[in-house]
Image (cartoon, rainbow, N blue to C red):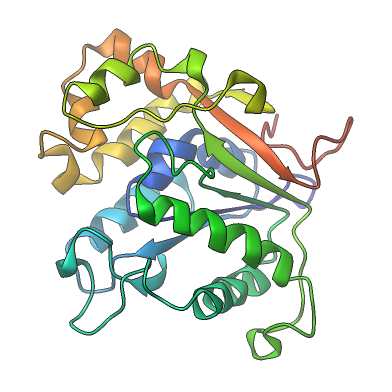
Length: 259
């Protein structure tokens, strides 16, 4: 049963597995508290092998069925049917309009997405999804924009998942070890730190649901699966966010820590 006194939460992420890695804890926390939760995924299309994995991950987190923008991954042409645009090549206005339709349908109190860096690796799909999320959350509240997408709805808060420089003790060397960049944000950029250890087992189950990524040596799910348990627990037990809109508000109930 959903509880109207607990803020509803919509995650908007670039790829299947981003939702579990970046916000699996707060999604599970909100769902456990009785909030409505959902996730929109910008790349990979229905019928591809990663969508059943995404469905299993969202089921573990209590975040409903997959909601897809349907674009192709910038680095994987097999991620969408032939002729489908890559997210990074799609018209920005079109992509924002697709997201606005989901926001207006779901009417979330809080929207969570990527940071401007594109997370630690600076993936172009992450950066584009950050732009789409910021624009879409604002546009959803304006009746004159995308009138075909439903009745206006303005989320009360928008957060970006991020990684502060002080929080990558394990992740930094892990990613550099497979040739990836580490674009950690300054600590001052973080406005919200959430201890998600009570939901770590659920989060880990959601990460493991992305079986094709766990099986590969370079993606983060695979790297985490090969870590000693104590180090993995350190990585997945805390989630960091920056409040983008309307900014930190003392006493505001629309916060990510649902307790």
